[in-house]
Amino acid sequence: MIFMLIYIPFLLPGTWVLDRFGLRTTLLLGVRLNCLGAWLKCLAVELSQPVDVETKSAMSSFCVLFVAQSICATAPVFILRVPAHLASVWFVENEQSLATSIGVFGIQCLLQAAWVWK
Image (tube, rainbow, N blue to C red; front, side, top):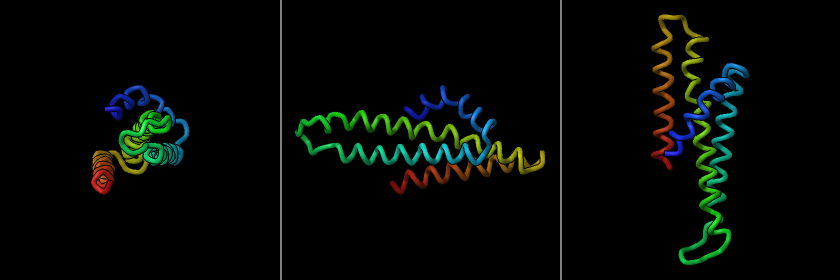
Protein backbone atom coordinates (compact mmCIF):
# COMPACT_ATOMS: atom_id res chain seq x y z
CA MET A 1 0.00 0.00 0.00
CA ILE A 2 2.84 2.39 0.79
CA PHE A 3 4.17 1.99 -2.77
CA MET A 4 0.96 3.43 -4.21
CA LEU A 5 0.78 6.22 -1.63
CA ILE A 6 4.38 7.29 -2.19
CA TYR A 7 4.08 7.20 -5.99
CA ILE A 8 1.49 9.99 -6.16
CA PRO A 9 3.41 12.82 -4.42
CA PHE A 10 6.80 11.82 -5.86
CA LEU A 11 5.66 11.47 -9.49
CA LEU A 12 6.36 15.09 -10.42
CA PRO A 13 9.76 15.28 -8.65
CA GLY A 14 10.73 12.00 -10.33
CA THR A 15 9.79 13.39 -13.73
CA TRP A 16 11.69 16.59 -13.01
CA VAL A 17 14.84 14.65 -12.05
CA LEU A 18 14.64 12.62 -15.28
CA ASP A 19 14.21 15.73 -17.42
CA ARG A 20 16.76 17.84 -15.57
CA PHE A 21 19.59 15.41 -14.83
CA GLY A 22 19.15 12.68 -17.40
CA LEU A 23 18.77 8.95 -17.57
CA ARG A 24 21.95 7.87 -15.79
CA THR A 25 21.45 10.05 -12.73
CA THR A 26 17.80 9.04 -12.45
CA LEU A 27 18.60 5.33 -12.57
CA LEU A 28 21.47 5.70 -10.10
CA LEU A 29 19.19 7.59 -7.71
CA GLY A 30 16.55 4.88 -7.93
CA VAL A 31 19.08 2.10 -7.40
CA ARG A 32 20.73 3.87 -4.47
CA LEU A 33 17.39 4.49 -2.78
CA ASN A 34 16.50 0.83 -3.21
CA CYS A 35 19.87 -0.24 -1.79
CA LEU A 36 19.55 2.11 1.19
CA GLY A 37 16.06 0.81 1.92
CA ALA A 38 17.25 -2.80 1.73
CA TRP A 39 20.10 -2.14 4.16
CA LEU A 40 17.73 -0.40 6.56
CA LYS A 41 15.42 -3.42 6.37
CA CYS A 42 18.37 -5.61 7.35
CA LEU A 43 19.07 -3.25 10.24
CA ALA A 44 15.45 -3.55 11.38
CA VAL A 45 15.76 -7.32 11.43
CA GLU A 46 18.92 -7.04 13.53
CA LEU A 47 17.20 -4.68 15.95
CA SER A 48 14.23 -6.94 16.49
CA GLN A 49 14.35 -9.35 19.37
CA PRO A 50 12.70 -12.70 20.06
CA VAL A 51 9.06 -12.81 21.11
CA ASP A 52 8.14 -11.45 24.56
CA VAL A 53 11.33 -9.42 24.92
CA GLU A 54 10.53 -5.76 25.48
CA THR A 55 13.58 -3.65 24.69
CA LYS A 56 13.87 -0.20 23.16
CA SER A 57 15.60 -1.59 20.09
CA ALA A 58 12.86 -4.17 19.58
CA MET A 59 10.22 -1.47 19.88
CA SER A 60 12.00 0.82 17.40
CA SER A 61 12.56 -1.88 14.80
CA PHE A 62 9.08 -1.35 13.34
CA CYS A 63 9.76 2.36 12.82
CA VAL A 64 13.05 1.57 11.09
CA LEU A 65 11.31 -1.02 8.94
CA PHE A 66 8.54 1.41 7.99
CA VAL A 67 11.05 4.11 7.01
CA ALA A 68 13.02 1.53 5.00
CA GLN A 69 9.89 0.40 3.18
CA SER A 70 9.02 4.03 2.42
CA ILE A 71 12.49 4.59 0.96
CA CYS A 72 12.15 1.44 -1.16
CA ALA A 73 8.75 2.69 -2.31
CA THR A 74 10.34 5.92 -3.54
CA ALA A 75 12.79 4.13 -5.86
CA PRO A 76 10.25 2.94 -8.50
CA VAL A 77 9.17 6.54 -9.06
CA PHE A 78 12.57 7.13 -10.65
CA ILE A 79 12.82 3.77 -12.44
CA LEU A 80 9.38 3.28 -13.99
CA ARG A 81 9.58 6.30 -16.32
CA VAL A 82 12.85 5.16 -17.87
CA PRO A 83 11.48 2.88 -20.66
CA ALA A 84 9.29 5.61 -22.13
CA HIS A 85 12.10 8.16 -22.00
CA LEU A 86 14.59 5.71 -23.46
CA ALA A 87 12.22 4.77 -26.27
CA SER A 88 11.59 8.41 -27.16
CA VAL A 89 15.33 9.11 -27.34
CA TRP A 90 16.65 5.97 -29.06
CA PHE A 91 13.85 4.80 -31.36
CA VAL A 92 12.01 6.30 -34.31
CA GLU A 93 8.36 7.22 -33.91
CA ASN A 94 6.84 4.01 -35.30
CA GLU A 95 8.98 1.82 -32.99
CA GLN A 96 8.49 3.77 -29.74
CA SER A 97 5.35 1.99 -28.52
CA LEU A 98 6.91 -1.45 -29.02
CA ALA A 99 10.15 -0.40 -27.30
CA THR A 100 8.25 1.11 -24.38
CA SER A 101 6.09 -1.98 -23.92
CA ILE A 102 9.12 -4.30 -24.01
CA GLY A 103 10.93 -2.09 -21.49
CA VAL A 104 7.98 -1.92 -19.10
CA PHE A 105 7.40 -5.66 -19.44
CA GLY A 106 11.08 -6.30 -18.72
CA ILE A 107 11.00 -4.19 -15.57
CA GLN A 108 7.87 -5.95 -14.35
CA CYS A 109 9.45 -9.36 -15.01
CA LEU A 110 12.53 -8.34 -13.03
CA LEU A 111 10.41 -7.04 -10.16
CA GLN A 112 8.35 -10.23 -10.06
CA ALA A 113 11.46 -12.38 -10.21
CA ALA A 114 12.99 -10.43 -7.33
CA TRP A 115 9.75 -10.83 -5.36
CA VAL A 116 9.73 -14.60 -5.92
CA TRP A 117 13.41 -15.00 -4.98
CA LYS A 118 12.97 -13.20 -1.66
